[in-house]
Length: 415
Image 1 (tube, rainbow, N blue to C red):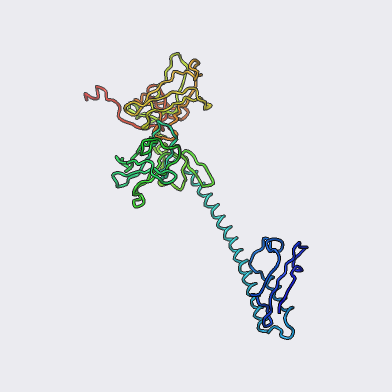
Image 2 (cartoon, rainbow, N blue to C red):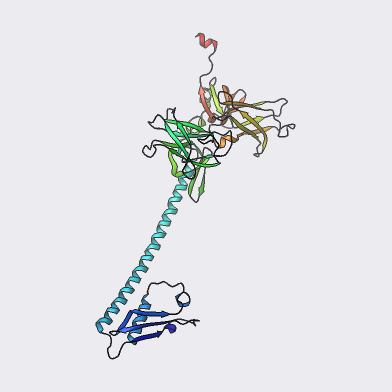
């Protein structure tokens, strides 16, 4: 016995195409194996519908089965109860699924709240690092394409005497192999990369991964950056701290300590500064005082940090460059440049005032800096700020890099 049912009455509105389902009844029930459906089931009633049977669909089929049963051989009660049980199980399963989805949404909300809370605490921690001396693990190095550029790579060797450093490109291929040795008292060594590959040619501008051979089995081997935190930037990837001219993730912090500015000469008292009288010192220099006198010459000493050349910019209080002075390293790795007060046009002179000393290469090489070196011949304390006078230049004790005993007089030598 074949059964045909027009199910268009089960759909809201009017349909351009009608659907029909045909099935055979065997032993008083629908034989699912003989079911055939006509009509396009990609649109209309079936558009964007799940293939899973809902409880209402099951109930409609059950009602149709009851309506179309053979009156002479009605459905057995046990079979009817079994199908009702299936309907109840289906409804229970749907309710369970809805409950699980509700729990998932609540759990996702809790996790998101915890993420926001953790990020907030991380941001607060990052801000507290400003002014602190930090050591961060460095996983890559950037080559900017300057032919006279030497990129420093600092490596912690631990107990190893040396280590092989591989620089990898985006595809993981080794483009340069360097050797770090001659470690210092902190078991670290610095190697300089000139931007060339193992073939002697300059590599393309970009970032290169640092791989130290053996670091997988020896955690004491790692590349790092160590300097004072100058600022913090918050990004979608998390907090980035600005150190050594770079921005690195706070997740890479290995060690934090009070910076030399805070714990050393930065808070030096006037009495302690007086004790530096007669001492030979090297002080980092970031500015100069220009009085616009006739034939005035400003001599600027530079530590070149392994570079052959550098570009020195003299900038006014508005950050405008008034003069560019090239510097060339000598045999001991330093350079000396002079500025006579002339502007970029070479004929006009700069107005009197304080001018900043900016070195382009210092942005990527922290070992490049301007300095003054000589004997401390005076101490001043203006507006609560202690200053050392070295060869007529007043400098902050916070910028002291090195101190050594002064030259002995003949009387001291005789004694």
